[in-house]
Length: 91
Image 1 (cartoon, rainbow, N blue to C red):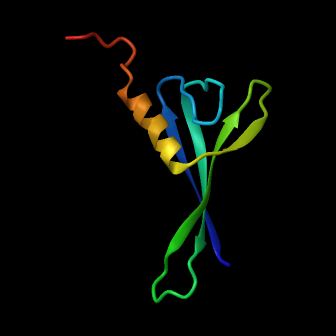
Image 2 (cartoon, one colour):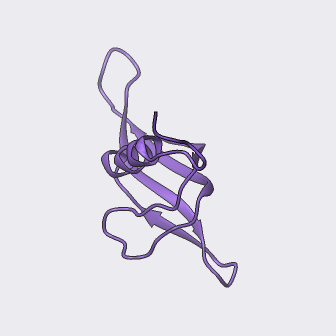
């Protein structure tokens, strides 16, 4: 079984929550790790996502890998982008 890993960084402009976790996370940059496995037996190369984790640093400086779904991550990013920007005024 061939597995590949990738890392991307997401930025939240506002404090946010993730589905399945009670705590409010501060705005900032977060690393997201994605693992995928190669689908065998196909005539072309294709991968299937097996896990997604967000790295969250706690108050004591200890890093935690939180399993999340791509759907929950995209929902949190969408909520963050839809939130009013600090200092923005209604026109």
